Image (tube, rainbow, N blue to C red):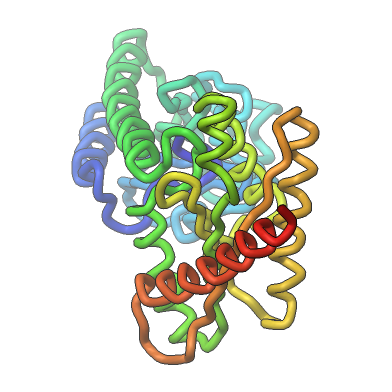
Length: 327
């Protein structure tokens, strides 16, 4: 799902044409004979002008991102999820102290909330005028229809983000699939080379997983996979990349500041996984984990992954020999 608190656009957006939104604002300001029109996005980080049409400057227009506490007409619209029409602001005690009125000379404001497909407020579509206005019902119907066109575009963005997430996530565990993991990990490696930090790749395999499936069935096996994915997401950092590349093989790619702590991290993963299995009443399972580090040289993620895979295989062989010796 698209993050509602995330800025929707940065420069030229790839999913829709912002030129279309610009034409919409130009059309509205022309039809309403208004000197200024805006599409503003609202998040907890503040208010940002996405598109504007104006004649002359104002404080709002030269500061396109304003803090969330800034007193604004748009803030009222977004927070109350209601249309606001103030046609004579300087004579209205509720609004005549706003900076837009006092400093910018705004006399008339008409703003409508714009919504994401599931109903959350994206921001506002608004008009500002320096003179008193008298908009009729026909004007309100017109601007509502134009607002609906903008919401149709947001629905396309929302659907695109959902499809992109589906394409990047493993259907069972809801963590990254191999394709997404490779893409994101390579980006992290490139960044590490440029900024000079170390990256570690963990290759994680569940011991005796085939035996688990054969003995208890695939439903229990799937549960064990989901629990491992949840354990990794819970006990690793948000910035760490966690993925499943197939079967019972999981991979973690993380930035590290102290290589000596990798042993602790691997032990923590194994311990927390055992605790989660016990809590969910799934038979106890152990993990074989191998790791590899970047070498300060440009390298592919596949090379780093293969090194971690070989290290995991050695640990898995050691586990099998130890288990055989106990029989």
